[in-house]
Structures are given as C-alpha cells and as structure tokens.
Length: 246
Image 1 (cartoon, rainbow, N blue to C red):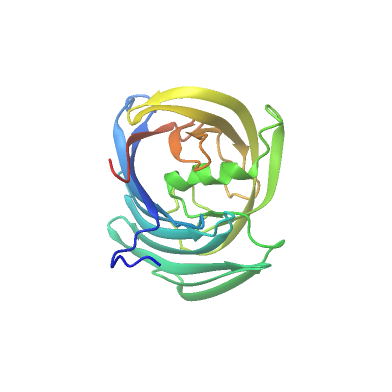
Image 2: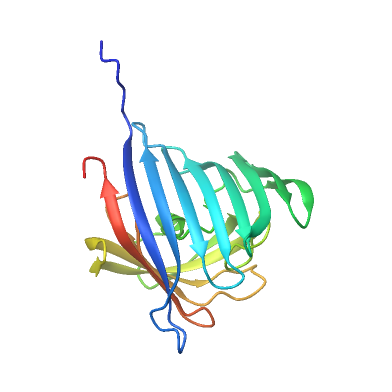
C-alpha cells in the first residue's frame, strides 16, 4: 500500500514549434508558433493541449485538447477557433466504435450537431495542430519504404488548410510514403527520426502540396520538422522540448 499523500503517475512533455515562410521575399520570416503539452498516463493513454497562432492575415488562433487511449485510438477533442482576431467557433468531438459526433457553435452556422458513421473506431483525427500531424504517421507501415500507402478515412475539424473554418466534421483520405530513418538536428536538439511524406489528401477542396514530416522514432511520434512546398511554401521546426525533471 502506498501511504504517500501525493500521486503522480503520468509523465509530461512540453514543446514549442516555430512556423516560418519559404515564399520568395519572405524567406525565413516567422509566420506563427505553437505551444504544446503532452500528458501520458501510466496505462499509455495521452492528452495533448495545443495553442497555435498563425500571423498571416487573416490571423488564426486555435486552442485544442485532444485525447487518445493506450492503443492510440482517438477519444475526444475540444477546439476553439479565432480568425481575424474574432471568434469563429468552438466545438467538442467524440469518437466511438463506428462513429464520430460533434456539438459545435460557429459564428457563421450557429449551433451545429453532426454524426458520421466510420469504418470501425476512427483511426485518427486532424485538429490542425502541427504537433499532431506526426501522430497520423503511426498508421503507416515502415516495412514498405517508398511505397505510397493509403488511409481511406481521416476525420478533420476543418477542410481549410489553415484550419480556419468551423470547427465542423469533414472526412478525407490520406496518401503517405515512408522515406526512412534519419538522424536530424533541429533547434530543440539532435534526434533519431522517422521521415514520412504526405503526397495527397483526396477529398480536400484544394489539393495539398507534398508535406515532408520528421518525427521521433521513440514510439511517441513527437513532431520535429515539417516542410511543405507548392503554393504553401512553409516550414515548421521544433525549437524546444522539455520533459519531466528537465
């Protein structure tokens, strides 16, 4: 029996991601930032709390709290969104075996209730936090480097590439290639990494350019670096990562 009055069975990691532009005339210009905290419980379940800011007009500010069980199955997510420094919407999403549902209120649509049927338990949810982009990569087979793999069902809170609408339910697919293992250095330090490339996202209103993602290879899929070409021309880098006791 543990007689201590204190209990701390979870671990916590905090990090910062910097957004910069690669567009001509704006090379290296800071265009946003993201602060995240991931709490992992003793059984492996985890919750990430993310504050994201995009400075490009119209500015976007998003707060999201996203939870998954020990098997990385999405459980629920809360999203609150501000666009052009004004309230856009807030909503709560819940996932279960064969469905996803949400209750939201937006400045454009008012009160919205949605429910979508899914193929079994939803595999992943895109709340538009860059830190969570890497978490989708756990679903792809690393024994098939260079092969395009398809995720037929991916749920989003917004189809806008900046996540600046809604929040409301939207369903797309995702095609990804696993490039391989690499050792990379970012401002937060040197890491052993997995390198993936998202090559398409069928169902989006506008085609998404190729998106290279590097994440830690330690089983936590912590976002390290992201590089998007095409019309987006943006770059993301982990600048700080602090764990318990550091």
